[in-house]
Length: 192
Image 1 (cartoon, rainbow, N blue to C red):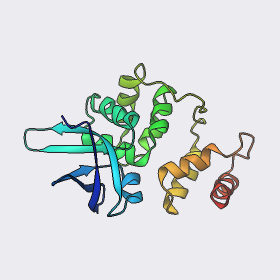
Image 2: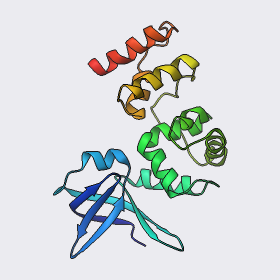
Image 3: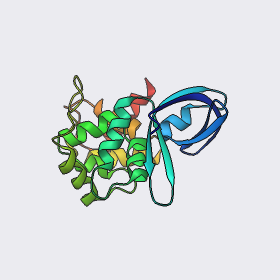
Image 4: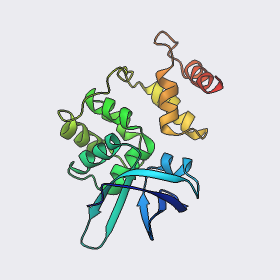
């Protein structure tokens, strides 16, 4: 199995990098943030996981072993395939996924396109005992309808789910509970 590779990026596609390792070029599927920050000609080092199916081989790459291990853990959940696990890591950071699982908040996972209520609950149930919340990071704030609306508004404005959740985490706990005030505070996070 290919566990790690390093090479020069020859081409990039949405969610994929063509990485030259010696005389061979390998298409590696990566989370969207990795694909967006990588340019042709860059040298990358990726921790990889090879997914073998009856009709295809797919190589998935991650910047850290922790992200790769989380990907493998997600694959162990019934109903979660490689594409869905990759989508989760594209829209949420590994820490955000760990926090959501550790604090039993499937609604955080449901914000990712393609993840329904049952799948999110299944992920939390299957991984709750296997994933610990990242040390030193606060648990997620309780997901209220207002915060969900703020998150949706930020995503509609073009911010990623990860950026929107970071802005929500920085809203003071004693902030007003109305939508306009919380949205204004979330936007101030990006103005810093």
